[in-house]
Length: 66
Image 1 (cartoon, rainbow, N blue to C red):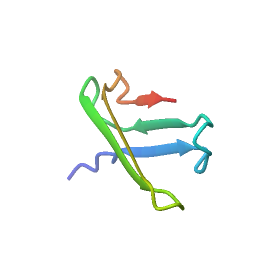
Image 2: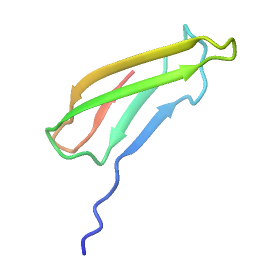
Image 3: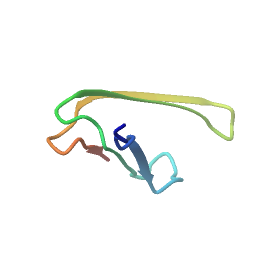
């Protein structure tokens, strides 16, 4: 039985204001594969924020953006 590494999502910093930059990365994906990242967040003011993006993982199985 093989134990393939599971995808790992990281967001740095873990908390930011709406006008501050942050970095999102996913590792351990299949190389050169289409990936959709989707986020839905409820703010402290009860507003809903939603975002998504379509990417292709690189040859190392990584997607990153900021």
